[in-house]
Length: 151
Length: 85
Image: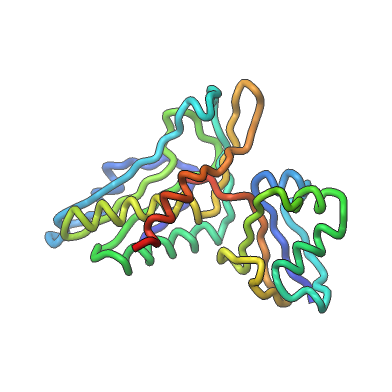
């Protein structure tokens, strides 16, 4: 279960190609790419600083991937999350799931993102015309993660 | 008998420090006891741990709760709700 936390950008095509390798048993690859938007809560966002908890971040992401693998019949998942200074249009996070069929790959990919949003220790501080402000956690993210525990 | 406390995000800014070594009093047995101790110090700690704010906790890099036990040499991290992704 490859998990990476890095400042550098990532190349989606190269990452998926390397993760896929040449396994003819793979019938489906589902992916999600999270991006920095230029607006949040009605304010224009010039950029953001992404802070994390080194050590726990990797442990939490590996735990989320392990949980996804225990819930769905998938082969593996790749998670890359960037930290440091980011600006609008930048890529923040990549989740790739490989498996035999699309249904489990889609579900596991969404599950990993929902859990990442609520359990992985990252914090965003964004720059707006009003100054720098910490991004508030959203109740909708908690609700999205909660639905996976309702069976 | 001490523990290492780390602060992240807005909590780190409110505390004014990224972390500290904290001498563990014998009666501090869990996260709830530790929170009460930090609030009792007053100043930045009292403001940062004000009960109106959501403060999450991790013990040895696993998400934890108020009743999670604490022992010597543990790494305790306090932070606001996470906002990655």
